Length: 120
Image 1 (tube, rainbow, N blue to C red):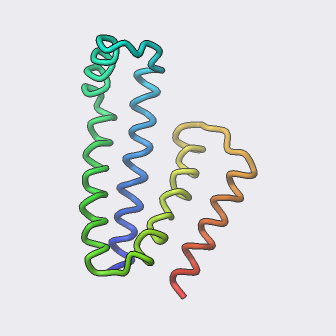
Image 2 (image 1 turned 45 degrees about the vertical axis):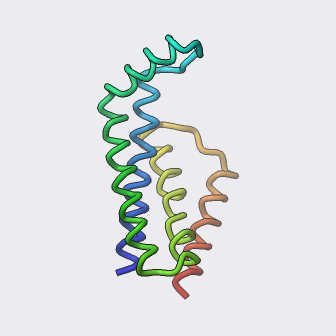
């Protein structure tokens, strides 16, 4: 059960991060940090379907993580959910069309090794 919950946290966290990136790419960079301009940017971002879906997935991830830490040790829960870093790197490459350097791929591989060590 704890691995199922960890997988759900990984999936929902990854979904939230990718959707947030898509939403902000759709909106564009924020250049004006005056209060009125920030309010308008916040209103525009809040209407983005990507951002709204990201908020939903973030909330879902939070509650699934609460369930996970209620049945598993924190020393398992936090490192196990680091698998989201690996999935996010893969999706950044193939969904967001980002260039991933060899060093980042190596980092993702090391995180994978760390998560695998948890199953021992």
